[in-house]
Length: 132
Image: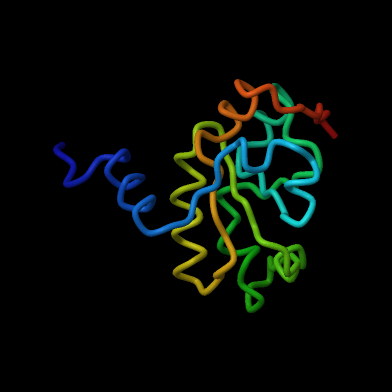
């Protein structure tokens, strides 16, 4: 089966339409205190690798349902007025997610370039998440 477009093209197209923030721009806690960081990774990734301190976990597969106030799965964290910064492992899922929620109407949203891997590589603090 030949695809019309691969995932990297989807990511590149999304990145052309969204805002990005670099790790150095939010590495210090005072630089991210006015932002809500959203970890889109699978819960098993959080248990295995930890997350950025203060971030909120929103499984990527539920994002659109949690964002929409008309959804039975709406999550009030999306009523927060702070800018949203989505991140995943490499920045691919977060780029796609950022584009989708912008299309849904969220305006104050961006994604973390390079994702959690870039955060860790830059020496960013990691908070353990334990299995509940």
